[in-house]
View 1 (spheres, helix red, strand yellow):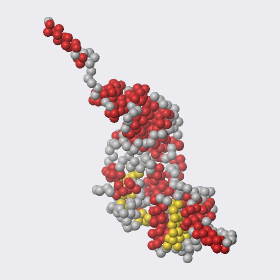
View 2 (view 1 turned 180 degrees about the vertical axis):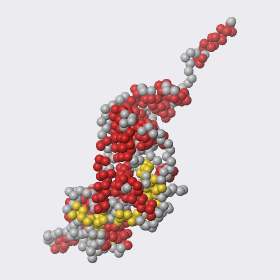
View 3 (view 1 turned 90 degrees about the vertical axis):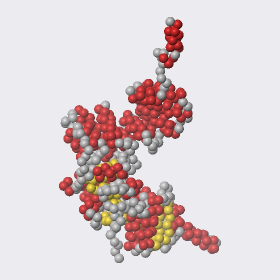
View 4 (view 1 turned 135 degrees about the vertical axis):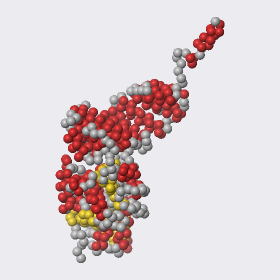
Amino acid sequence: MMVVAVLLALLAGCSSLGPESAPPPSVDRAETLARQGDNAGAARLYEALAEQNASADRAAFQLRAARAWIAARQPDEAARVLLAAQGGLTPVQTTEAQLLGVEVALARGQAQQAWQELAAFPAPTTAPEASQYWDLKRRAALATGRFVEAVRAHTAQERWLGTPEQLRASRAELMGELRDATEHGAKIDARTAPDALTRGWLELASLAADVARNPNGATSAVEAWRARYPGHPADDVVRTELLGVHVTPQAPTPHVALLLPLGGRQSSAAISVRDGFLTAYYVNAASGRPPVRIYDTSVMSVAQAVAQAAQEGAEFIVGPLTREEVIAASELTGSRPPILALNFLPTERPAPNAFYQFALSPEDEARQAARRALADGNRRGIALVPEGDWGTRVLSAFKDELTMGGGTLIETASYDASHTDYAPAIMQILHISDSNARHKRLESVLGTKLEFQPRRRGDIAFIFAAGEAASERQLRPQLRFYFAGDVPTYATSNAFEPDPNANQDMEGLMFPDMPWMLGGGLADSVHNAARDAWPNGGPRRNRLFAFGFDAYRLAGALRAANGGAISVEGLTGRLSLDTERRVHRELEWAQLQQGQPHALPPRPQS
């Protein structure tokens, strides 16, 4: 009995075997609890681990605890932990803590505060912080009724989603959120959308709600949406969620692939190009046009887009758009369909086989301006260009072409386009200061005041004055003020934007431009056809719209020519192909008179 009593006493004194004993906290146990749905238990373990550690490890466990409290729907506990974790955070941890703070505000129903915090927060550029940031911004935008911003945030987040499954889940979630907002009384007006991509998403809000109320009666409306927005990122989700179609991997189907970055910084330009491309598709007879599929290079790499397009049966690829993407496309190895890139490679990079290049190149326009000056009999001149890379490239192209044609560029000067006073550059290049100096010397010799009017240099036959429209509207009157208003002045198309009232001070300026901007038979017929092809007046019809329109027509011409010569009458000019497979545009010439462009003859009379 004594032995039994001793053993019982020993067992009673062993705390690890008592009824209150528990294993020490560990990451594995916390993660197991989270997987089992006990997020509050996981949060407590992470807090315990934070107490046992120091410095960066402590902060890391505190941030895990805060995230677990949010998952447990206890935002006040999360806020308490975040407050305790303020000191000693690394830059990455600081970003994470700020994003968790926004998530706490959303969980508390403080959507406006969350939106304001995100508005003051620079978008991260690394994963997973960037994905979390755009996810929070979408949720905050939806909660505050900013539906256009919600779509933009979703589109930005897609770049950080790695798999097709994640993309599809994200798109289905957005459509469900827009539908729920409509069903809870939100007024979502698709007409407020700035582009077709966003407008398609916003239209899905009421459409998805209609399908939920009447699954069979809304089928025709869903099909009409798909016809209006071919290639829209939500198409697969619409087919599966709204039409109930089981999506299987598509069998290879001959088609033309269009590669564009429909999200991110270049999305506005890409959408204009896409709208022009699809307009050219619509105005062609249905029997004579190949199917088109659109691949978004803002959510996949160029290599992935080309590989996917080829796998799905693309016979010809149009795009990509940006200079970096075009370089990446030119470096691809292995078999692929022919490519019409929508930008030029750097001149030092040779194009691979079956690789065509089409761009709205200001350098090409500068060369045409030089040829025009020579054809007008103006062989000696000066050039004024904006400071920076654009001005340097345009000036170099103009000078090379002028010199090759036997002309001479006597002097050049650059101006700061961010300012409105270009007098220093103008006085320098027109030698106005020399005239003033001669006047002062003469007064000094004669010892008397003389009536005087400065004179510009008299050895120039033309001025090449390149710049954007806003700069040109300042530059041209200042040239006139300094006695150069009578000198023939040439520019590129960048100088012209249609606005008769704003262009009054640019009287006499000559520039080349595309038929789309100057009007005429083809442009007018496309305007009418586009109005009929697009609902609600259609997309914005700028120069990039015309560029996209011509890209479609070029693709057809190149496919038909099979490597031979082409000549296409386009909206961006008369298009032809050189030996390097670069597309060249021959533009029309115009001169501004009373604020309006008036056509100049293709070649001046002798």
